[in-house]
Image (cartoon, rainbow, N blue to C red; front, side, top):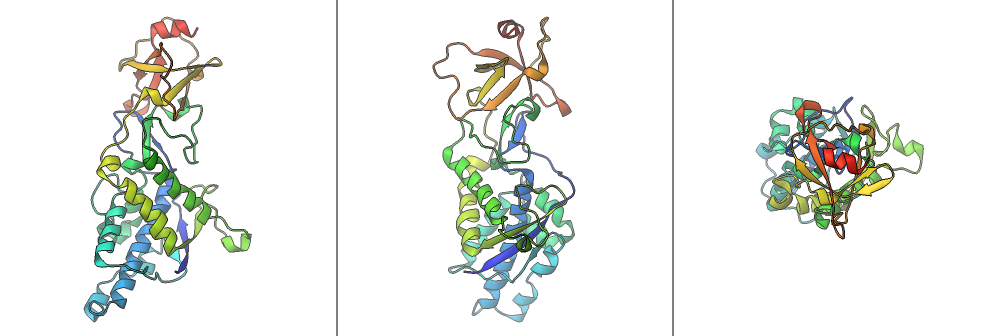
Length: 316
């Protein structure tokens, strides 16, 4: 089992869109930079594995096939550097390579084959990785992040929405946890001037220490759980039962009354309207729920929640 040192250069800024959420905000379970590094590492690993497989195959190792291999180190060099050639894992076959390609392509929000795009248009390598930073399975819908009391900012989400499947949540967060662990080094000299993933900011370089086992049996294995029609066809639906409303020291459950915001005569401090994710059904054992309305925020996203006229009176 080989051990690899990957160094990934983060871009100077975040870019790219997010999946359609019926005009809610798409909250990444793993921060944008985590998915960027994941796609960069797996793209490199895939093409390195293909090269190793072809060169070690009794019939495929021909001059013509070797000439058609991607020069992984050169193509990925602007963003990803690896300290050694990729050594194929035991049991790699044509079918397993097809499966690996499917899983990597499943990261792309816009569809299509990221693997093919890398080989056909390597000069846009950064753009291809950006396509993988907001996979459909990689988040859930909610109100604007500024309205959340538990928004993790540039860290991983900590709480699974109650309507989200436990296996989905575990698969995505296990990927994030491995990437965080793999970027930690005891001695500063081992980091070689790189940052760990969690503390890194845009423009930094992050170093990861990963083995074939990490790549095959944790990263790719967890992708196999979520790159499925169940989790990767559409974003998890918004569900009021997965959220709590916090105001003036009190905690409320709520329901969405309508999609048109009518300004109430009583206007409490808007900055005081805060929400948090709940893994427990927040409507359980509650007979009354505050009605909330959606109103547009930036780019006309209906991701700002306000109490209705009657609800505003209740929380006055």
